[in-house]
Amino acid sequence: MEPVNRTEISEFFLKGFSDYPALEHLLFPLCSVMYLVTLLGNTAIVAVSVLDARLHTPMYFFLGNLSVLDICYTSTFVPLMLVHLLSVRKTISFIGCAIQMCLSLSTGSTECVLLAIMAYDRYLAICRPLRYSVLMSHRLCLLLTGAVWVLCLLKSVTETVIAMRLPFCGHHVVSHFTCEILAVLKLACGDTSVSEVLLLAWAILLLPMPLAFICLSYTLILATILRVPSAAGRRKAFSTCSAHLAVVLLFYGIIIFMYMKPKSKAAHISDEVFTVFYAVVTPMLNPLIYSLRNKEVKEAARKVWGRRQTSKRGRQGLCRSETSLCLQ
Image (cartoon, rainbow, N blue to C red):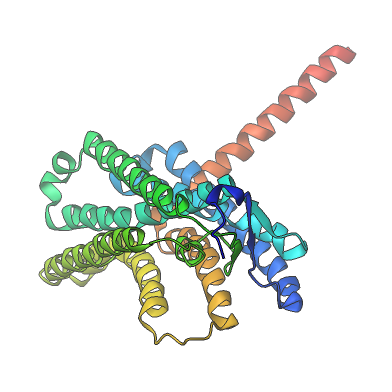
C-alpha cells in the first residue's frame, strides 16, 4: 500500500479509556476535584510567596516556580481529558497535539531540574549558612530559573518538531489520554531512530543526573545535620528541607516505579489509570506537603487571609458610613 502523506492527518483520536465507559464516569469527578485542588493549592502558594515579605527568599522563590510549573503541567492535558471523559468525540487537532506534547515535555523536564536546584539551595542554606545570601543571590535565582525554563522549552520544541515531521501513513489513533510523545511515535511509519536517541539522551540527562545531584546534596546535608550538637538544632535544620525531600521522593519514586517495573506485551488498563493519577495527584500533593510541613507557609497564609478579611471589613464599614451620610 502506498503511504499516505503526513500532511493529510489533520487530527488525532486520543483513545484513552474509550473501551471502559464506566471507568470514564468514575474518573471524571475524581480528576475534576483533584485538578481543582491543584489549581487552588498551587495558586495559594504563589500568592502567599508574593504577598508576604518574609517569604521573599530563594527557597520560596523556587517553591513559587514549582507551583507555577504544576499548574502549567496539569493544565496542558487535564481540561481536555475531562472533556473527553464525557464525550464520544475524543479528537485533538494536529497543531493542538504538537502544542500539548511540547508543553508537557517542557514542564516535566523543567521540574526535574528545578528540584535539583532546590536541593542545592537547601545544601547552601544548611552547609554554608554564613555565605548563603552571597552564594544564592536574587540575581542567581533569576538566572537559574530563567535558564532552566528557556533551555527545557527549546529542548522540547526540538523533540516535538522532529517527532511531528515524521510520516504517519494515515494512522491517527493514539493509545493514550494525551499526545504523549512515545505513544505518537508508535504511529509513525518512518524512521524514528533520531527521536528515540534524542529522547534517551535527554532522559539520561534529566532523570539520573538530577537525582544523583539531589542524593549528593542531601548526603552532605545529613552529614552536616548530624554534627549539630543539640537535638533542637538538628530538628530545626531538618525541618527546612523535609518538605522538599518529601516532594523529591514522591516525584522520583513514582517515576522509578513506573519505568523500572517489568513490561508486559499487552497494555493493561491499570497502567493507564496509574499514569493518570500520577500526572494529577503529584501536582496536587506538592502544595499540601509544603503547607502542612512548613510553619512559615502556614503563618504567612493566615497573615494574608487575616489582612484580606480586615480589608474587607474596612471596606464594608466605609460603605455603610457613606450610605448613612447620604441618607442624612
